[in-house]
Amino acid sequence: MSELSGISLTVQQIHSIAERRAREYSGPPVRSAMCAQNSLIFGMMRIYAAVVCRAPIEESVSYDISAYTKWLSISEAQLKQWISA
Image 1 (spheres, rainbow, N blue to C red):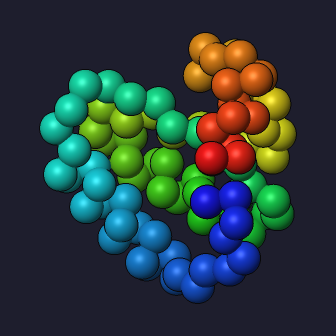
Image 2: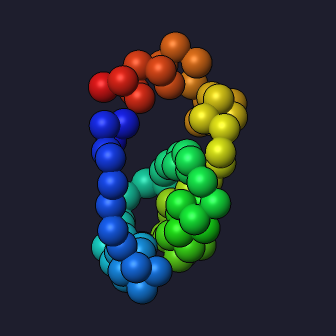
């Protein structure tokens, strides 16, 4: 999604998407990382993370993408590869 140039969702839509994800996920525990570029996106991502935590899904939201290497237990090279894919 590094090529995404815009999206238009309401807080209610974010909450609904997160509720559905939490309700329907039945796999093993997973971790996801979301990097925000501004405070509005950060807040929307935190809403999503707060709702999906009911499932075995752990979300992290940050402004600093490099913080995810330790949290996801991956190298910086792997992270850069995933971002550019």
